[in-house]
Amino acid sequence: MGEARDVVERFYGLFGDGDFVGARNLYTDDCITVTPGGPLNNDQHEAFGRAFKSAFPDGGMEVGRAVEDGDEVCVVGRFKGTHTGDLVSPQGTIPASGNALDMPFADYFRVRSGKIAEQESIFDQMTLLGQLGALPQG
Image (cartoon, rainbow, N blue to C red; front, side):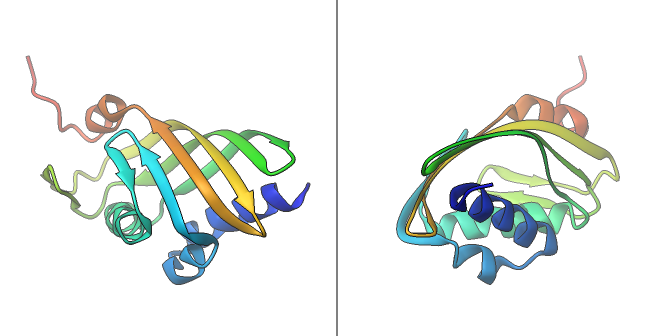
């Protein structure tokens, strides 16, 4: 495993442990993380992570496959956790459902000088909402 993948694996571990200060220290000051909801600066990304971890205290990323090429890493995995806290977002709040979440994701990272300089996360918001029971019944 090279330096880039090591940085990514540390990020996943710190997130799983709820260490947002440590996780944030792995990012360059100018990093923008692109998500299905739009681009996030470091403050917004940390708030997003804290909201997700608050909703899924036992949650974390499980790496299924990872490909590293120099300073780039692509990961396919699953975010797994139990929805025991409210999921608060700018779009509203999804009350804790007690449901398990098993959501596939794909992440792209570019690492520069031992820090994450670019990140793009892809996940299906409908899968998230459906597993939490937050979609209208029809």
